[in-house]
Image (tube, rainbow, N blue to C red; front, side, top):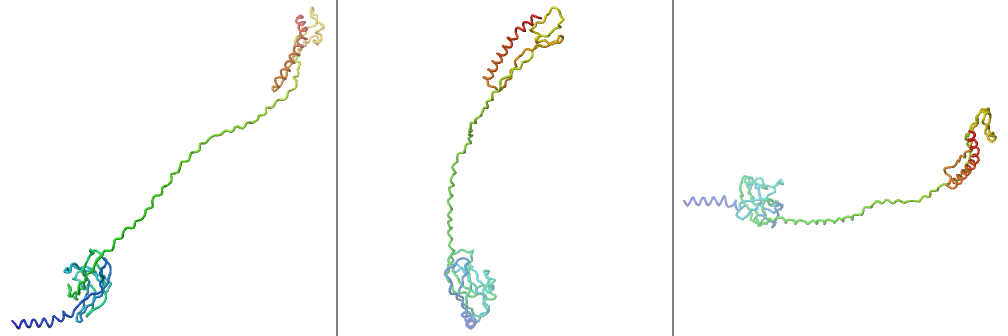
Length: 279
């Protein structure tokens, strides 16, 4: 029994302890705070002279005992990897041996901001979980400040002046009467009316051989021939006047005509009386 324990202790000392003591990982220059989705870098060192291919991954976690990791790591192909640990060979690849350099990381933009822990883990070529990890460092994930909405000044509505109603002009009709002087032509007085004696038949002579009817000598002047009856003309004045003669000249003409007619009638009266006796 004592021999068996001695051999077991010797085996563990010779083959296990030296290998474990030779592998170490460290991270430096980690920012104290980042924003969700913000890319940042950190200096990572892997000391493992006897290691084969290694894959390094940076993780965020909380609390410090949690194994629920998040975060992205950029590999040599510039791919951002955030996958399950079963596919650890997708992360930043380190060929055989040690490594020292910058690796880029970022926090999940869909995760809740807050205070987290950060560390680097190493996968082996066939490993499904971390073989080694670095020290834990604190990091704050701070949401970017919400931009206050810019107040856009709304222009005040300009008061449109109400147009003053203008009085509607009333059409007025002005009739301007221009007096026209009408010259009334005064007709020139016409000449005095000409009295034309119109013959008037007074009697007809009879046969001279008729007995018992002697012809007076006063009528001999009006009778011509023995068988032919000669009309006895009584001068009847004809007054020719103009329609445009003034009233006063017309009145004078009428009076003159009346006087002449009276004189003629007086002169013819004895003859007419004699003639009536003869009949």
